[in-house]
Length: 115
Length: 112
Image (cartoon, rainbow over all chains, first blue to last red; front, side, top):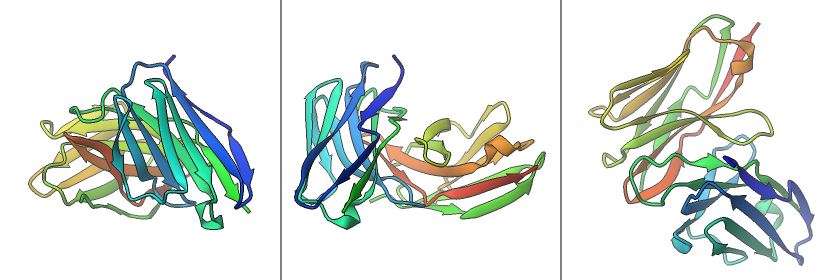
């Protein structure tokens, strides 16, 4: 399996809801990433997990809570989001989080709409 | 932190012509420079990358050049085809921090 998968593809939620995004890879990669992409903008890094440990948090608001239960799975828990959080949320993975020359492979993304 | 600037923001070429997209980076420690193609509604897909120990890399119609002294790298697409139409992002990262810093993107349109 050479793909990163993400579920759901689309998500609509209210500002009081709690929801989770899921990302999975079976390439043996030990680094996984969450990026946020607004329309016509580049992806912006949110979190990096390296060997199942959080290594980078780009000052993301606490209403976004990442979790890495194992080396293949990455979750993003959402709570009390704002309409400006509506975006495409991309997951990516690479062989390691710090080594040289690690290609990152992206999942198809979850398109999130916050009402 | 790293800052990556990308130009032009839009580029329109005739089918068969060449297209060149340029990026500059600020962190001299950056040593890995991938290029991603993103079609509308799709994921970014890695199309080519270059490491800092190499000055040029080619893969069929796509080539990337790197000038470490100037902190500048470019994507060259020859014999463009309509299916090359997409948004292209350059990016940079370094050993010890593999998270990518992206350029602002170039929307390439290839006119048939």
